[in-house]
Image 1 (spheres, helix red, strand yellow):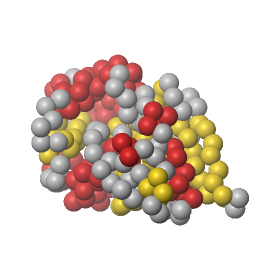
Image 2: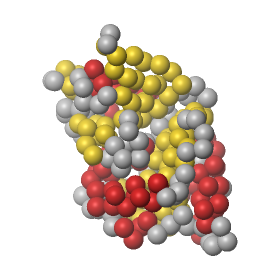
Image 3: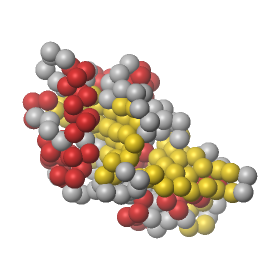
Image 4: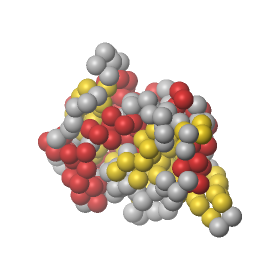
Length: 238
């Protein structure tokens, strides 16, 4: 079982390269059966591009159109467990609080399947909600601005909500590009989460039961944890 956490990014080819091992693991799990990769997307009502975009990313990773089973819902709707009848699970990007709400009814089922060996890949929002303590957005802590409002995910105060529980640390994304590292630092300093990582775009943190966590791609993963002296920030590089 591997969990692939991508920090986002608009370059289809570069993101696809990071997901090639995910597609390989899906096929290994399928064995002699036709491979099925569940693609979960939560979009705005007028969004006509996200489905094609994420399909293109997975096809750039080597997946075929017949291997992809897309479940695209509108913000405010929720998924049911039928979407998990697959060999691997990809959760895309968009409004993080909407994704967190959408997976609520299937949270336990996702956790059970991943623990049973189903590979999981998150892209931006899909990475953030993979955590147990899901940092879903916000741009203030205690009324003090800690990141640009543009990165706030339509929330004012920084909020931590129950995620999928695949990880015991928080995840923020678009770190260098959106400046979200400061939000994670503030969340740890305030005790909203004990520790976490902030992942750059076009960068993946891969967590596997068989190997140590690894960073791939063109950026960095920023590790943040509380300490007696305050907050410690370290950098994980490819």
